[in-house]
Amino acid sequence: MSIKDAPEKQISIIAIFVFIIIISNFLLCPPHASAWKFPIEVSTVSDNGEKIYNKLVIGKEQGATDDLDYLWDTPALTSHPDSDHPLILRAYLSGKAAGGKQSVQLWKDIRGFADGNTMWRISIDSVPKGKKVVLTWDIPQDMLKSGERLILKDNGSAGSDGQPQQTDISMESSYSFLSTDEGTRSMSLELSKASVRNGNGLGCGTIRSHRDGPESGGIDVLSVACLFLPIIFFKSRRFFSFRRVDMF
Image (cartoon, rainbow, N blue to C red; front, top):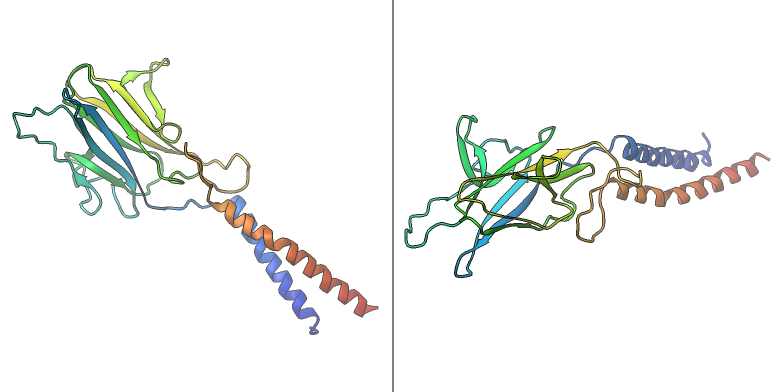
């Protein structure tokens, strides 16, 4: 191999490497198992105008399980010994103790990255009849990956199709209802995963939330790779042109 063939071979190797990156971005597009936490506030107002609330947190963490993990989960303190100030709101996540044999009440429930859908169950009780209960949240930017949806379902309120009222977390920032009694209102948060691509068809991405902000994901890799393609192309033409001149 001549000295002039060496740069040409190096450029060919680089071009093949960039091509492999682009193909991998289109076809493989592996999901990023990034840990995240999503807080949600459940609140009402007392007769004297005081805001009463509980903060709940759901999330994903590598190594967490569906059972009670003391490293990541937080048990709920739902007792209220003060008889002079009756409890008018309790909100908690329904989890499972180690082994899944007993139920536990949690304020924070972190799950692992298992395949399939994930559901967190929310219970709200002790709210006097007629009081408004408000659930509010602020979804972290780029928390959901492409094809993922986080849906809040109100099992105590049916929609026009007879199914529980649903709210897309990425499209709304709150949900409210009027209490019908002091019993338990059952709700749930369901994270569903669908293997789909961005609407522009260019690799992996994220679902854009109701807030403005840049997207992230595999499309960034593709954009960076494309920046080098013109340089590789023109350098290849340059070396090929020199070789044809030498041959003549």
